Image (cartoon, rainbow, N blue to C red; front, side):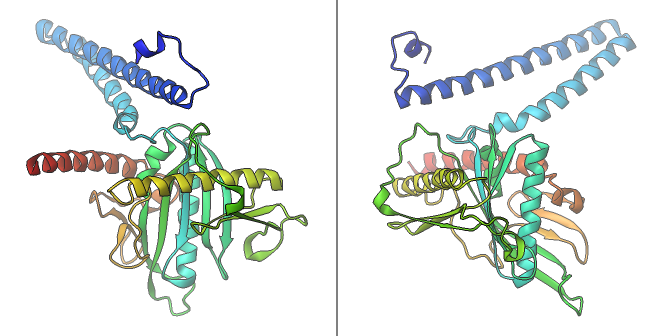
Length: 343
């Protein structure tokens, strides 16, 4: 790569721009590894001093440096595990209420709040692109754009079916209910990546942006709905300040969804980016949030269980992100080994 950039290159070429981005990612990773390696060498020196001198002060220094290394490594480990083609991209996350009626719609809202809180804590820029309110409570669906480096890589493991078990606040008899919601996550596609969208393939409609319960939040038609006629993909954006901005955001999301669709067609592995489409119901969930008869959040892929449910629902999901990335890394290694055995 260094050899490539030492020559005369066409900086307007999309491939050159892609390589510039890839080079920056590699340099960032190398810098991170160098930093951790230097820190490890310092720890080793402290230990060698203690072993040779048997001085308690050297032992204290060793323990301080070791704790600092553990803290730094824990912070950087997630980034180290992110090596996918789109992992450094921003993320487009959508939530859809599944079976469970009003409870499912309320659960969809709970998940929306959880992801927005997580993103805000991580200092990401969050745009609520579209929200379809529920009839009594919660939401039927929502789409948010999480802008910032590594957003997609960190959120990609959230795709799938989520399940909530609790005493329903909407049941007069206070019975236990099970609700479902689906989460899909796709990467925002760089502007230099070309996706053909012909104007004649688009049906663009404008409408008034509406708030919760259907009330209009403005009197002008700023909301935009774009339908891609050949594929049937529909994107709605209503939370920008103007019709133009809503249209641009909707086109950006449509581009990402069309690119993902084309990638699915080209790859033998179906659903690499958004996951295999499953019925939003019992038996397909990736994670359960149990509030009754006991409190626990369990990830069914990694088997991780967290008992601080309120904290999880308030956006503390880093532990699930980390465990998923570790699990996914091991799963990929196993798949590669199995492929080698077959060949």
